[in-house]
Image (cartoon, rainbow, N blue to C red; front, side, top):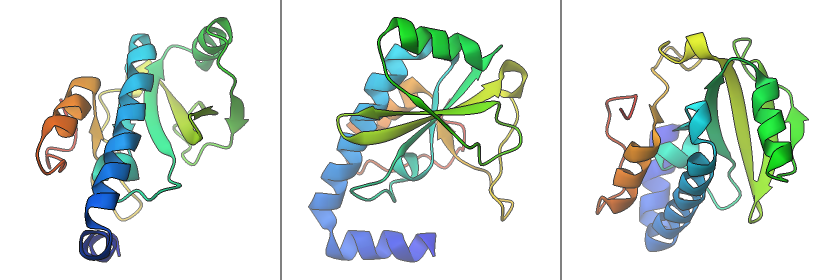
Length: 151
């Protein structure tokens, strides 16, 4: 299904889709810079390039306690809400809005940072650090390196 969505987007949305993906990735970079102390990784449809106009940005954070991130956001006057984690590994999910785009901060214990995350079908879930996302924005095709970790 994912491959077919990609084909559809390339055929029928072309430049418009590329611009939307770039804008979502730029927002992700801005947020990743702010959240740098918490080891952020971009993951999901924004990283993979299959996101649509109303897609959410998913960032994985790795910290000793989710309370650290909550206190940080409060101190920065960034409003957020709690969402239900989709994974039993996740300690918490904090959702915030950035220029009309919802961003999910999926918080894991620090010890999970070196774990390879997989999809329900068993495929490695790609993720990328800040530098890799910046490189992705500079690449002419904006395509994800298939290494899976973006390191």
